[in-house]
Structure formats: C-alpha cells, structure tokens
Image 1 (tube, one colour):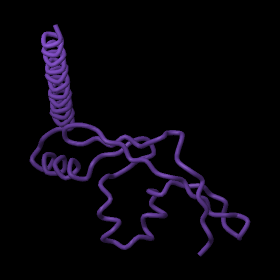
Image 2: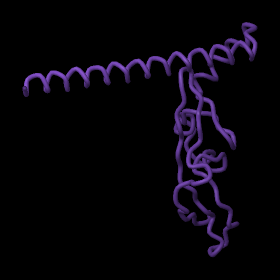
Image 3: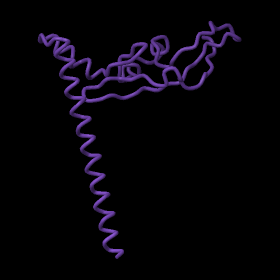
Image 4: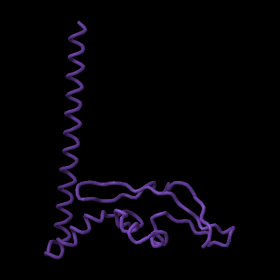
Length: 133
C-alpha cells in the first residue's frame, strides 16, 4: 500500500451535482494523491472514485447516497424508482417530464415560502413603525 497525501478541496468542479426526486444536492470532496516520492503512481483522485470506494467495507460503500459520473450524479433512491418505472414500461421521456414537474413544483414551494417570510417581515416592520409614532 502506497502512502496517500491530501491535495485539498476540488476546484474544477467544486462539487458534483446529484439529481434527486424533487431537487438537487451537491457532493464535495477533497482530492488525494498517490505520492510518487514513496513509489506511488503520482495519480490524483477524488475520494469518491471507484478505486477508493472499493477499499471501503461493503456496507459503508453501499451507504454512499449516489451513483456518480465524471460530470454529475443520480441519487440511489431515484435510480431505484426509475428502474421500477422502466420495468413497468415508463419511458425515459416520461421520467424526464415527471422529474421536471417535481423540480418546478419544489421551486414554486420554496419561492412561496420566501414570499410568506418577506410579507411577515414587512408586517412586523410596519407594526414597529406604528408603535413608534
């Protein structure tokens, strides 16, 4: 086993975007390097790359929440749903439409929460201004 050294946080890209049923999340990681000073290959890699994940205990590796590519990822729960849908003849374009609708719905809910908070803050400010007169 060759010594590994830390290379800091990723910066290109900073994080990997993972699609979920109703939104997105990001996985950030540090990079490590197989140190060539000590006989290693000199390769730099992310901590979630298969060569690293394969060294973890199977249960721990299975707990990782997403399937990742070099550009993005998909949450394992969503992948399970898509597999079941495809097994029941739901097309990929139908899945694309469903996910788009769910993501827009989630965005709308977050925007509505923002406007409610803004309205509540304005009412509070108006109440304070009335009391100060």
